Image (cartoon, rainbow, N blue to C red):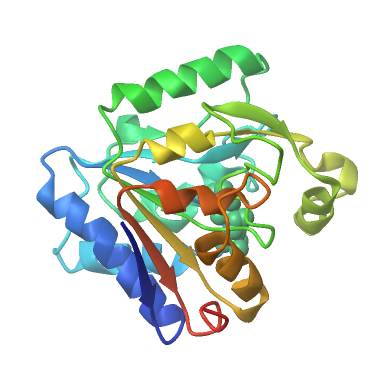
Length: 242
Ligand code: F6R
């Protein structure tokens, strides 16, 4: 089942995404929530923090698993996804530090780290809902367009376009990480529910390709058409070509 939810703007999109996540937190005794970084989910995280502050949401039993992390960046680097998640969500709610999971960017041994993270995700007993954003090229997590769909957590070389897009956050291009650890498409598809949020006109073509076109690893998000319960939350601009 793929449900397309059209919202009028980013604020409404953020509230809808936060509602889907809050529902899982309330309905499960030990909720396991998959999270994403990037600009898209920030508004939803702000809503979750707001509801926590109003006493409407409790994170004390919540476990999180994040999609990805740069290889080579320590946690305290302000460009690491660990840092981003703490800054945008974890530092503001009552989640237990030991229940927070991300790939470890400082583990130099890629095979060991990928195996460790697969075991972590499996060890949660299953993700109740996984939040995703989508890249302009249809990527989900760091799974870029390719000839195949990846299975488990893997170590990917960043595309030059991604390095160029990210260099503004670093002192120089040489400081931009060249590799990242990412959940695989198979890992993502194993979540019981998936919510993918996309906003803005710039992604409208890719939204149309991903959710109405053929399922192909050339548009990684298209695989979600085969998932049993996925919510595609769009603002008006991202939905404009549907
Ligand atoms: C984030 C991630 C990426 C982003 C995607 C969209 O953890 O894995 O796939 O979801 O690049 O990024 P934004 O939201 O910044 O447009």
